Length: 448
Image 1 (tube, helix red, strand yellow):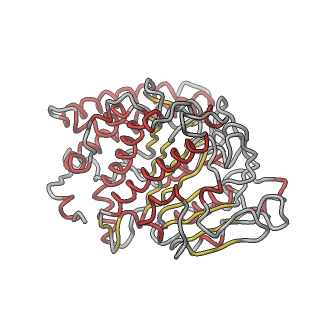
Image 2: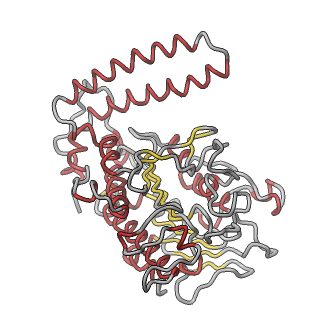
């Protein structure tokens, strides 16, 4: 393992101690026994087929809870890349999400448990936005998305910081690298450059505050969002000044895939940057949006786009199902590579992976045309022991059975409890399952 002492060698606060590096804050937290928590949400499109997550001998869709250890079980083919992490893996089946939109996409529903569309503003924070607010860093939230090769920044309508505040995603790896690590790539006296920028932002902020006093309430609130953005950018740049050595040690190497026209290269670069962001401490919450309906996997030798594959299009000798299997396995390999990097960094009595939760889920439950009665997922890591995992398969009773009451809202509520920032219920209830008080609370099986 890489020594934390080696990683920190040469780190200085810089900029007159303008802001303590989040990386050093993490170190201090570890020393006093309060280890940081990190969250990664990997979201795919076109459904995550439940049957392809079942280990040998285990099935979902029954009338009673299935709770089984993964010990001695043969993992399904697409989860084989996680073999080394089976003791940190939890497969969850049987959750429903009928409170969300269904069809081709649930939009904010997958991470927010509420009905939404891709063209209307979010009505509440999604779980990644909620956690980003609770566990702030230089970048409270980092969103990275496989684009179509021409996009820079996108708003895929899956993540929100709050009502009307959707979160952006970087599609171009080179642009994302500049945004995250530009302070070490810019060259020259970065302290002078960023201090100069901070002075300009201070002046702009003062003008905004002056204008705010002259506006009525609604407009004043809107302008407040702009002011928050200017202040966050200023503070972020000053913090980055203090982190130059840490960033240089942990930033990913810029190689050909950052400039490639192949979208799978983009995705691999995004996973590299996501891991580096957590290791360097510039973010605690990352969402990776693997694909959408118009995404291409030509880098895997798959010609049709995701939408066409969902409608049964083949690719040469590959059937539509072959294509779906290859894409799913590809995502899992990227997750395994990220997990290995975090596992290699000591933290407290364990590693960074021990204090991280990686969730793999679809933005559209289990099918290309979804009904949201089954929302499969898997979780890697147990967030410092707060998630009752240790290699586990959970299949809740199927939707429509007398015993079914568990929804993705209960799962997201569980995440808030695991994170130590609990809510009674996250998202909207499914009123077909009864009153809100009957659906509130976390999934007790997953709490320690």
